Length: 318
Ligand code: NAD
Image (cartoon, rainbow, N blue to C red):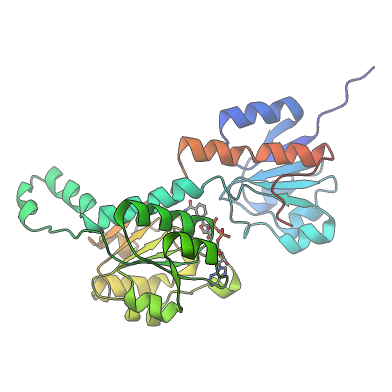
């Protein structure tokens, strides 16, 4: 008897080796030769599953060119690169890993806050230039007891709140379209308007998904409302912030500094004015890049296999 052919799964980018080994048992792996749509179109005619990370898109045109496609797995949370309307119209299941990176991103946020408040990156660079004396110039601030304002209070916002509240006794304010009374009670957090949050918080950290309603949510008016001593953190999505307004806020001292993991566009162009600013700490969209989170995200393969085998996935997006 002929063995049944394994379904073909197209991977846009490499994933954690342990998850790849699980997928290899159940599927024939195909690697994307390029993430340009025209190139992808040539690779999907017989594909039954696609796994996408942060880069590339799964467009309607691509899904229409893949008549056997049953499932798109997002290694990570944000699904703005997948045409969800087209997936629904074509009966394609979309799965992701919503809990996988929460801890890593929240810890990264705390890291950016501490790096800014204690001027760690700036001091490191100065010492390497032989400027030991900056210890008298770079005077930091403590975070203990300072107010944290979270714009978006879902998984990552809440975990960041917990870390900052437990470790540094920071009072928590949040702005969200949804109320979370249980967490309010647990952390003594207060739900406030965006305006109030911006004018009171010592650290403002953004954790909204990228949606039409959140595009440019933090712009010039919002930065002008913040305290000149406040730090701004963005680990969500670059376009949630008006980056030109952020640059002016930093250059002109409307705020004290920024810790940024996400940008608009990415990669951040090498001539970006952000790179010339000393009061900015920059990481290249890597808040979730820990070994632990990368494995949890790569385990999206389990849900991809579940759908291919006709079982219910754990984390259904659509
Ligand atoms: P989540 O869905 O758990 O939480 C998002 C919160 O934002 C929800 O409480 C929701 O009600 C709120 N929200 C939605 N629209 C809003 C609006 N218009 N105004 C105010 N609040 C609104 O998401 P999460 O898992 O906490 O992820 C948060 C962000 O972090 C997302 O943008 C995600 O893409 C990003 N992320 C970044 C990385 C990274 O590597 N930097 C990794 C994972 C996630």
